[in-house]
Length: 194
Image 1 (cartoon, rainbow, N blue to C red):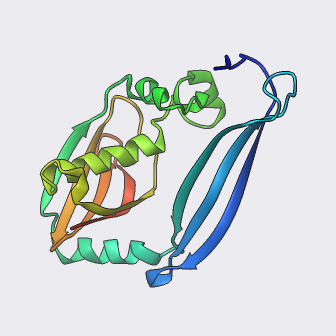
Image 2 (tube, helix red, strand yellow; image 1 turned 90 degrees about the vertical axis):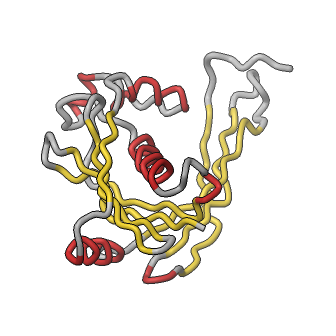
C-alpha cells in the first residue's frame, strides 16, 4: 500500500458517453466516467486514482414545472411536513467530500452573492428524499424507483424546510419551501414508488 501525498498535480476528465431521449421532452445524460489521475510521475506515476460513474436527467424549461403547477391548482397538498435543518448541517455534509467554501466560509459566500454559507444542493435533495421516505415509503429506501427535483433557491443552515406533498397512486409530487423567507427552494419534485 502506498501513502497518498498531501501535494501533487491532478487532472480530472469528464467523459459524456451518451444522450438518450426520455419521456415528456427530457433527456437522460449518461456519464461514462469521471477520472482523476495523478500526473506527477514522482508521486504516483500517473496511476488512476478513482472513477465515478453517474447519470443526469435534463428537463427543458417549463417541462415538468407545468405538471407540478397544475397539481397545485387542482387541490391543496395531501400532507405538509416541516424538516428542521441543523445550524451545522453544511459542515457535517462536507464529510461527504464536497469541501466547496461556499458552504462553510462566510466571506467566500458573501463574495459569491449570498449573505452567509448555503446548504449543499445534494443535502437539500436528501432532505426531500427523507420527507417522502418517512411519509409515504414507510422508511423503506428500496420503495424508491425515482426521485427528481428542481432546485429553485438555496437553503441556509438553521432554517426549516417545509415540504408540501401530493399523492396520486405510486407517484408523490412535492415542493419544498422556507416559509420564514417566503421562498420555494425545490420545485417540480416527483417521486415514483413501487
